[in-house]
Length: 267
Image 1 (cartoon, one colour):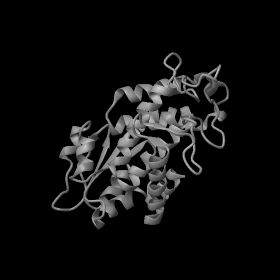
Image 2 (cartoon, helix red, strand yellow):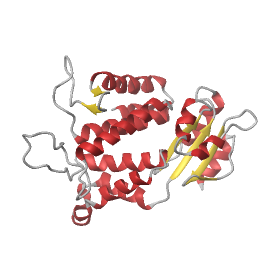
Image 3 (cartoon, rainbow, N blue to C red):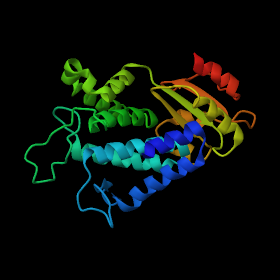
Image 4 (tube, rainbow, N blue to C red):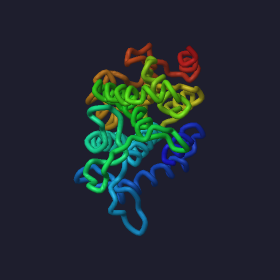
């Protein structure tokens, strides 16, 4: 639901939806997240449950945080997503076979650890995790994360071959892993009209396997530049917000008007 509100905020330019997504993400951070070990609890009702989070709790919350970043460009959500991804790896990753077990090995009551292999009403944890890993690997320029995404997809090769309709989300991630990734970096202040005009144009296009980042000239840009030094050079042009359209961070010349951006995206 955090993802749904965040995506609706982008497409419809509705700040109320963004506020809903932010409040929900903040509620989980304050009530179900343990900062001392970057872990999640399973649920909350009149207080946090004692049950630790499962793999799908991590995968879906991380997805929500990544979508919320692209709606708000507040890097604290990226930082939290990165920490939770590391925890998910330590608790649920199957080092031998790839993919993610549903529960951690710390639960002594579990005799057999299983991996969900169906994208039903809710996609399986491994399918969502593969998406998160591919996105984070671009944002943080981390080949280890991309390799882990590819191993996750490969772990489900047999069901994908024999019963592909059972794993539609994993098929999406397979397609993304085999196509060239694209990045759109907007250089400008998030609350200024010229920046919003460029973002408005981006959101009018269907752009799979694409991440949208903001080079805000401040904390957000500095955080991204820790792993993507090329972002430091992405700046406004003649005091106007600029859009950089890139493939594997090889970028075309920046543009400042929505019309010029539309032509680039149409290609």
